[in-house]
Length: 480
Image (cartoon, rainbow, N blue to C red):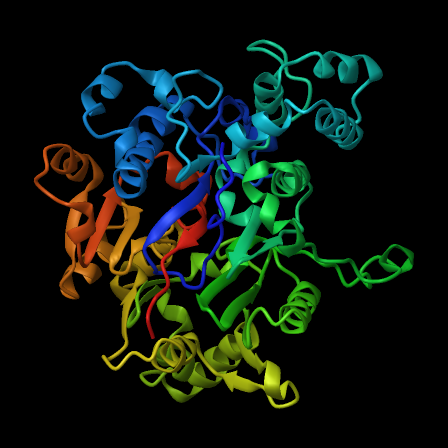
């Protein structure tokens, strides 16, 4: 893969997407057992073949038609008629796009370098407590084969040597591009330790990122944290789903189940010290599995439009329709669970506070993005109970913008789809859209205000949407 001097630049959530990192569902997903599912951060076991052939493959096709059509246009029916090697990163017929970039492919390439292979095999074997004989066996493998082993945990179809890393499909969480810098994660859960290690080696050693080595940010731990009593360590944990680059000068950092306040503190200081941004908003949400990251409760659709969970809205906080007792009890509860503080580099001592999520998002649209149109909100489940919380659980708020106003979401969130229709959005299923792209009935560049519905019966059970399953590397700048 050739080095690209314009490889990294992300300064918004909605600028036209030009390049991203993904990871196709691998065989490790098909080996998650019920007794280990929650340890590996899954709520349930999933059916691998359905995810691959009937769900994620549509995601790959959509991305290619938008970002790298030369890899797929004219070949669609050949691919659909059994040419599965097109999707396999370890196969010679893999699509190998430098716009829709597969993590396993990058990992395989750096593992062809003997010194890197030695270091990474030793590191992984130390983490997984492998015997010396296993370490020696891994060193004999090709880079392509070894990358697959590191991700799936399987030496071959019958022999597993350590656990899989099924969350590797959620590439957003391994890091985030902030303007032209890379912020690497510090996972909260042990199940993601190997992911973090592999990502670090890719960003530091792959030629594609060679020009950005001095712009990779690692978050340091608290000094002497290992000497402190349990509970007082001030853990430094951060995952990419809790970081949003909403403008070239403004980053949001979530404090959640997966990202700690100490990490938010440290990242804010680093971003200011390096003059990467001028403003950081800390969004503290409840530490609940329901939410996990801030991108599970809101994402951006257009400069003046956001999708969000209604329980974090103005009305939910103010509870205008509630009686006095409910307003006091529930209002107190909401304020305890949501806290938003905005720091400005030029005046750190005087932060700005927001009482609800809507006010923050309106402020971003109006002041950061200079939007003159009324700011609109699409609510999960069309703000109707119980559909709001049901559909938030299946990632109604976790949308990926391919360009401003064109977003990918799950087809199962019916009430949220209704809400998009009410805002004038076109709704189209991925399968239909792909056929129209193939026959030149629709030009991806001319698509506007569209929610693309992706099949989701199994993918949604993995507890992550398309925002989670993408790590944008390059977006066009949004004019403000």
